[in-house]
Image (cartoon, rainbow, N blue to C red; front, side, top):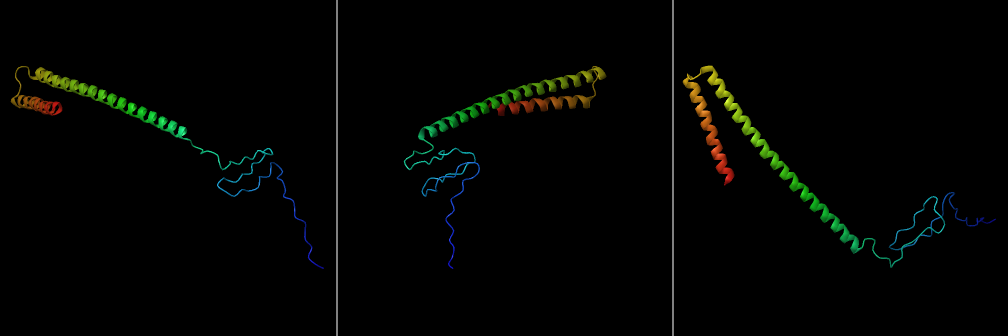
Length: 145
């Protein structure tokens, strides 16, 4: 007795969906089995199809990127201007606080000693005021130049 050959089995169709089309060898991707797909839904891109990303799409993407960069630079300029305004406001507040402290110290000394200040207090007060004046002068000359 010889070998018993079995007849070739028919390829089984999955219970849900369609059997994928035969595999095509070439630059296109093979079809992928999708459960629940309708028969004939398989579409293979032909050799002569155009590129997926056209020049118009690239130009649009460049325009979008350009608008995004312009918007980002405008936001950065606005943030820098706001920070500069806050810095100027803070400087004026600090100056006002310094003047108020100096006036408070002067009035306290005046109320304690009247017209008879101790010499050490006079020298300390004059030294501090002279130091503040010289520091401001140096800063102003450096800042304006």
